[in-house]
Length: 609
Image (tube, rainbow, N blue to C red; front, side):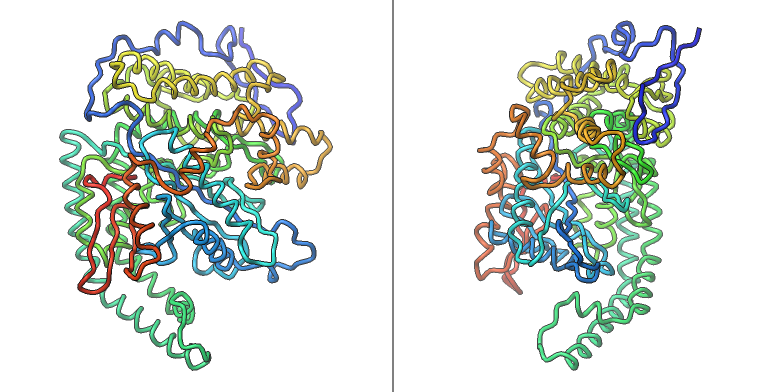
């Protein structure tokens, strides 16, 4: 006999697919399957002498800005995104010492160890809206990272409120806007890029890429000369029409005719295209092979726990807008608009954008431990979801580096499976894996049980924060499982699971509510102010806050002492207001001018995310 699972009352016009299941149907992983998942006495090896869950980790979050009370303002009357960004930066400078970025003068490094970047194409600087990206410092503890992220959320909220404009500016920590534009969060982890013969092959490709980088640089020099000449002409013309003697570099570039700028940029892309092709091959077939093999399944199913929810233009509710936009497993992420699960855009910047100023720094690409960037990540409001999102991945990376992979399922069709899981908030869909068809919760439980066995087999003095990660991971999974068993059982999930909390708030509007009213709840759930719906809800459940307020206040001013960012923060506090010029990068800073210029490394290893 075939059974079918279904949910009553599909709101928002959502179509529920009847999914055939085994006999009898069971929404939880059967005990016999759980026993099969649990590894039997795994052989643990430690490639590094560090406790579990102590690798360098970091988050990059894109915040959307908007005008709260537009009244009768037309779009051309709204503040341009560049003005909004500059005013937010000014407010941050009043909050703490800062210095500019070495490769991007618009980037701003903070005394707290983080960095602020303007995530907007130059052609859109004059348009309203815009995204402000703020990255946490690199830290070695999920608990520290949560405190750093919450301090950045507070900093972004306060800076927006204190910005000196005549508009009521608000900032949202979400993953999509009302027009369907996708942005959000990226996760960064220090991880083994390869091992053994795989590491040798990877390093061979790095040497080839370095040679291609040199060739590209030589070919690009005439193009760069033409670019500077065009900017110089534009600057001279700008001085004729303007009594001001100084002109902003960005304004000078904007004065160059569009067809010339487009031609020069297109030429540079052509020059670097062979490098991009080689990088894409390395990303898809050489680097982080073990991590991509197993982490893909975990990340795809993780949206059932850590997704933030999204109401699409058709009125369908999804677990994650970011998940619905993913179109490839591993790629550059941005070169041609692709949205991968594993992002290598920082490598593209290393071999292309940074070649002109730091050709020798490519040697860092030869190191065994590199930065693994994950693009399939939502901007969580829930402390529990934010903590588990990072802690669970860090722990699974420890498992993979120790060779504890027994029983871990592998999803067979990643992109199709991701879309099926993310579009089914009823959690009925099952996807093909190496262990048969499994639901998202079954896959998560498989990884949780394997991680639990791995931690138990690890010497007690090497477990670090892993026991807390397991405890909170299980708490989050049980919150969603309770809803899966009983549609009305959401109390445990409220305030813990973002997509379920938002779904519950939307349901309070009633079945007859219009899409615009529901979308308002969707967006204002992520508003970082006292008026934000998540903030208002958390006033009724303060016990769900995991980050200590005192620790958040400390992390707003300085990074944890154990972080490589500690020295960066100290130098910024020392030189931000001094006569010595300081420009910073993540791994080092350049201090002074001319012959007095010197480079200061922040950590001997230089292995920050």
